[in-house]
Each structure stands twice: as C-alpha cells, then as structure tokens.
Length: 459
Image (cartoon, rainbow, N blue to C red; front, side, top):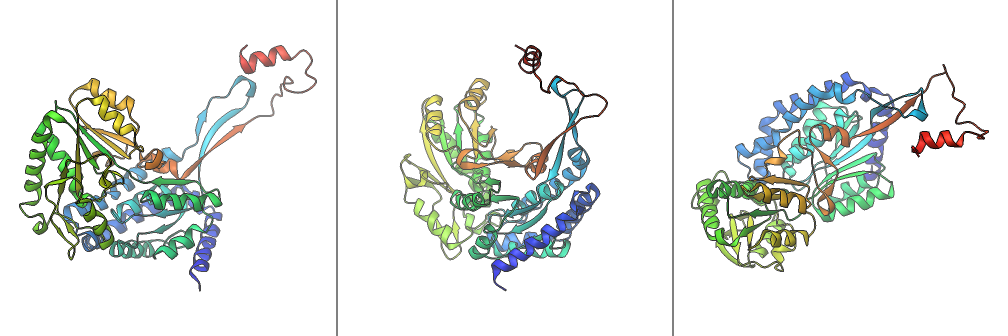
C-alpha cells in the first residue's frame, strides 16, 4: 500500500477512535499517562543506548531525555483541576444566565520531533496531548535513527495505534503526513522546515505550534561573579556538543572583562572535558556528516582561540571559541547549533541591546549581571522566547515556566499546564434559564434606547 494511503488509513482509524469519546474520560487519560510513565521507566536502558548511538551522549546527559517522566507526574497530579470547567462572571445584559469555560480536546494531533533531543522533545508534547484528551501520531526524526526506533517500539508496545501511533520514515513520510488534515500540528526543529510545516498546515487551516530556535545571545556585564559566569556559559554552550536549541549562540561581552572571561571559559572546558575532549567520555558528537561539514566551515571565521580541532571520521568538533568575529561573518548569519562560540564585545549596554534588536527575535536570551536596573533594562527593551538571568539553559527544565519562541523563533508554548493548554480548545458556554425572560432586548425598541445604552456602554 502506498505510504500516503497508509497514513490516511491510520488517521481514519484515529478519528473513529476519537469519535467514541473514550479519550474525553479523565480516568482514561490518567491511565494512559501512567502507562506512558511505566514504559519510559521500563525502557531507560534502551533510551540511553539510543541517544548514545546517535549522539555519543554520556549517560548523565542521557537522563535529560528521561526527564519527561517529571512532566508525566505533574500532569497526573493536576489533571483533575485542568479538566474542570471554570465558572466565569456574566454581564448584566446576560442576566439571569451563568457562564463557564470548558477545556475540550482538539482531536487528532501530529507531533514531529527533532534529532538533537530525540526522545524528550518527542515525549514531552505527547504528555500534553494525552492529558488534553487527544489522539496523536508521532513522527520521530529519522536523523536520530536509533532513538527513533526506540520511540516507535515503545509506542507500539504501549498504545493502540488507533489512539497513539508512531510513524517512522524520512522526508517522504513527513510529506505524506503533512498532506493530511490534522486538528493541530506540533513541530520542533529548524526555521526552514518550520516554514514548510506551517505552509502545509495553512492549506487545511490547521493550527500549529512551532518550537524553532535562532541565535540566542549571551550578554555579560563587567560586574559578574566571573568563575560562576564562565562555568555556566561553558556548560550551557557545550552540553550535547552545542546541539541545543537554547544553547548560547554567541557571546556579547563587556570589553573590559572579555579576556578574563575567555580565560575562565577555557579553564572550565578543560575542567569538563580534559586536555583532549575527543577522548572524554562526557563529550558528544555531531549528529551527521552534513551537520559536521556545515559547522566546520564556520571555523574559518574570526580567530580560533580555544579548540578548533576536528575529526570528520568521528564527526568530532572540539569545544571552540572564536574571537575577532564581526556581525557580518557567516557564523553570525544563522543559528550555529554546534560547539562553536563566537565572541563579540561592547562598551555600552544600550549598544548591545540595539545589536540584538536589529536581528530576529531569539528563542532565549541570557544576561549576566548583578545590577537589577540593568537586568530590568534588558527585560524591558528586548524580546525573546524566554530570558535567563545569570545562568544558561536552566529555564527549560521547569514545569511551571511555559517554553516557546516568539517571532522567527517560534509560536506557541508548552511544559506543564501550558502543554495541556496547547492541545486544548477552551469552549465558552453560556447557560440561560426559563424562570424569567426580560423584554428589554426584544422589539419594539421604542423607549428602550436609553436603558440599553446604559447597560451595554455605561454612557
């Protein structure tokens, strides 16, 4: 059977299952979340082995993937309150009616995952889809082929495909999926593919959540605690060999502390990965030869002052810092998504803010300073998906903070309650009674204008 027909048949099965109303039952949703949690626990070893094979991810960082268990626990704990209709006030002209807002599932959703965190960023949105009462089709990234198999096997083992299904494959599979009508599409990946997803969704008026990326700046003022600042920047930049959508993309540092900061970053890279990171068990590899070649070209920009070593056979690029970089260099024209940190300097914070604002809105913005007035200056005068003050990457880990982009870095958000909201429609319901029927709204209107004007406008 042609792939497009297989996909169409699968969606029809899910629509039939959704039509039974079973997914709207809160106890059913809770049971499915429990099953998802258990299969993650049972397959921890497979998940760790999958991301090790795809990215040479050390076991410690592999547990970032399994952190989605905490999302499941949070959803189970709060599911009853999330699904409960919320009463709201009515206006005088609606008397004696009552009103409420009822969350309801969207229907059949498509979740397309990335290759950089190929398990977590597949499962985390699935938690929201299940909690909200939807059926879902998952499309893991074929680039992270080993983890894709793990995801697909776990989903097949746990769920009826008429409810939750995983579809593996390459570009043709993605095209077959995007040609179908879904009730929501959740995509995590690069901006160019995000545009393709949004264009395909528009043909069916399908709403989308796009978790993209961008060049996330890391701005460092001169009043910082230098040791902690350097350590946190080096950690956030070089985990997963820089293949993190919210990794600091470039360093924008106050001129007077630049040399001292770079020296501290060098010390921390050595402390993390030793004199030769290629031999470190804690340092990842680039996902594919294509990505390796793209990143290696950036090493021609500026001056390599830390790292710069490569091994194409092992898809290894050392943790690298580039100095003497200009805003016009190729490395500053697109998201790096690798272990290369360009460094630019500034004299005045307002100048740094202007440079950031002259470019597309980033997914994350990092600002290091003890000065609360300067912190507020950055918060008020920049726009980004999220901000982290005096740290890097950690804003992603909390279930209480919605995560998402703005502008070219994405649209929509998830994590915790935000995941439930993303996959829900909040239906407004007005309920009237029969015990009274005010004549004011009915014709004839003679003598009623003054009163209706007062009620509706207050004038």
